Amino acid sequence: MDILVCVTRVPDTAENEIEVSKDGTDIERGALVYSINEADNYAVEEAIQIKERVGGSVTVVTVGTEESEEVLRREMAMGADKGILLTDDAFAGTDGRGIATILKAEVEKGKYDLILTGALADAGAGEVGGMLAAMLDRPYASLVNSIEIVDESTLKVGREVEGGNTEMNRIKLPCVLSIQTGINEPRYVGIRGIRQVASVQIPVHGAGDLGLKAEAIAPRVQRQDYFVPTFGAGAEMLEGSNEEIIEKLVEMLKAKGGLK
Amino acid sequence: MAGQIYVYIAHKGGVIDDTALELIAAAKKIDPAARPIAVVTGSGAELDQVCAEAAKSYSQVVKLASPALAHPNAEVVRKALLAILPKDAVILMPHGYLGMDLSPGLSVKLDSTYVADAIDLEKTADGKLKAVRQEYGGQVSTHVLCRMDDGIVINVRPGAFSPDESRSAGGQVVDKSGELGDLAASREFLELVQAAVGDVDITKSDVLVAVGRGIGDQENLEIAEELAAAVGGVVCCSRPIVDAKWLEKSRQVGTSGQTVKPKVYLACGISGSFQHLGGIKGNPFIVAINKNPKAPIFQVADVGIVADVVEFLPELTERIQEG
Ligand SMILES: Cc1cc2nc3c(=O)[nH]c(=O)nc-3n(C[C@H](O)[C@H](O)[C@H](O)COP(=O)(O)OP(=O)(O)OC[C@H]3O[C@@H](n4cnc5c(N)ncnc54)[C@H](O)[C@@H]3O)c2cc1C
Ligand SMILES: Cc1cc2nc3c(=O)[nH]c(=O)nc-3n(C[C@H](O)[C@H](O)[C@H](O)COP(=O)(O)OP(=O)(O)OC[C@H]3O[C@@H](n4cnc5c(N)ncnc54)[C@H](O)[C@@H]3O)c2cc1C
Image (cartoon, rainbow over all chains, first blue to last red; front, side, top):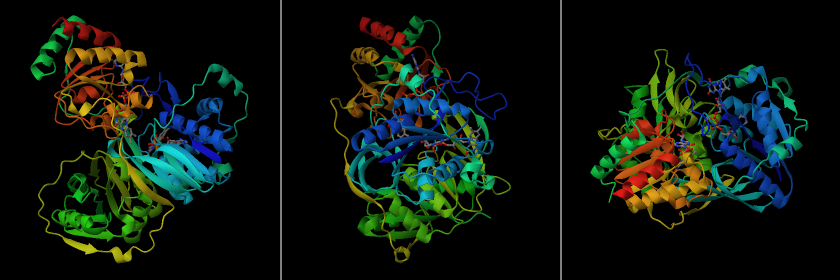
């Protein structure tokens, strides 16, 4: 099975405190640690496991900047056969719809039986996979947490739904699936693995190569600003030495029934 | 001029979802004079029950009945909606498991704009939509602006708007099932598999020690277990802990996990995403311990402590054990 996995480079929210930049038009990017989007790493692992079972190939693709190459190499070190970087000044500032449009143009240059995306990336829309599927006229299932290959043209997939329940679906290939975190245990990537793929050529495609006009990727949804939300009154912050904090906290817990 | 507002009504087992009334409030934010039309898909007597309930709050309810719509399979629901919705429709969908599956593709097929997971809405003086969304797991918010006149699909976060409880519409149900046409799809619903029952029932405990990614290491779960033992509670967790296979799925609190109603909730190294908070009900006393003073959890907690959980929890446990 020939599989394409869409991946993206994001500020690692587990490693960073995200703050709004001074002028409020962006987040403070200076000292951010970037990594592969969490769900995308699970998607690549899933693709590699499918290839290990039934053969085929795994290609990782990203729309980004030159810096995005590092996440492609990381996923190739994991076991993806090929990486493709889609970059162009014209792509900067596009929205999820634009990203799906760019990906569609690349998909049509190849032949993929299965396309995987992550369930969600940093902007939290969870939209790129479903849009790409509709543009390609392929069936789609989101939030997939299990994949079973039934035969050459059919998969059985589990979709996460409310309360940790799973909705089982049969879906025809070729199709697009968005992969939810936790579907597998992504393998570890060491420095050695990354070194081994350091010199592999990564093809770079721009708007011209993909036959994309600026209008096709102009954002329909335009971000105006960033701000820090405030909900409710906010917590009473306990301050002082740990000892003082703990004394106060223990009193509160007693009062609220949190100590037996 | 933006087009007619339509609201997709989510329901289950013949019971209408809370979002049905919340989305009326959302529609009124776009246009105070809006008379949104409800769209209900399904089959059988359950569907009629839901339509009748929706008609109390919506002046017009469009009923779309078909055996193929008995389970809301997004690929089939999309075909049904495309059969009846005008291109310039303003469509409000709950951002739940169906909405996430359905709306991105629906917007492409309608050639409409899509706004995901909106938590607030406003119409600007020049007729555009200004919506509030969250990014980076809720650490920052953003205003997004887009046109509405060419049609738009807006997924609204459940719980973001207070329900419109007036129920004074006395509406009409219009059956448009005849317009549906072919609903065959390349994705077929097979069955719903219930989540496995785990070793501990976290929904039964009055005190929960909840651990998140901030606990850092599987070995550190021990210090949470010790605290839980000292306070007579049990350990639950956020999703990354389950994704990493450190605890069973049945310990996860949130929209894709358990709903809990404890008296006291100690959130340790949890950022406070809405998916996690969605599983905490009954207004418990929430204590948040997080090393980041700006973590969103501090906005919803009653008491906040800026500390490293790995250092703080054992000290707290020790003090409690002293009595
Ligand atoms: C400088 C800058 C300005 C921007 N301005 C705007 C703006 O004004 N308005 C706006 O709406 N957006 C803007 N964007 C884009 C936005 O930040 C998101 O990258 C985009 O909307 C994707 O949204 P998401 O994170 O919700 O992706 P989701 O739809 O949540 O992502 C789901 C999956 O889609 C795939 N995917 C997502 N992004 C990519 C990618 N780049 N390459 C390959 N696969 C991908 C991944 O598999 C991912 O897991 C801007 C981006 C940049 C860098
Ligand atoms: C469809 C869907 C469903 C989901 N369902 C759920 C769900 O049911 N439940 C759920 O929990 N999530 C769910 N999620 C995931 C959710 O979006 C968040 O990613 C998740 O809740 C984050 O977990 P966290 O707070 O533990 O981790 P993070 O967001 O990574 O936060 C870790 C926190 O720990 C703090 N920290 C780090 N180190 C320390 C330290 N040493 N001491 C103190 N603090 C520290 C950090 O400052 C940070 O605030 C779902 C996501 C999707 C897309």
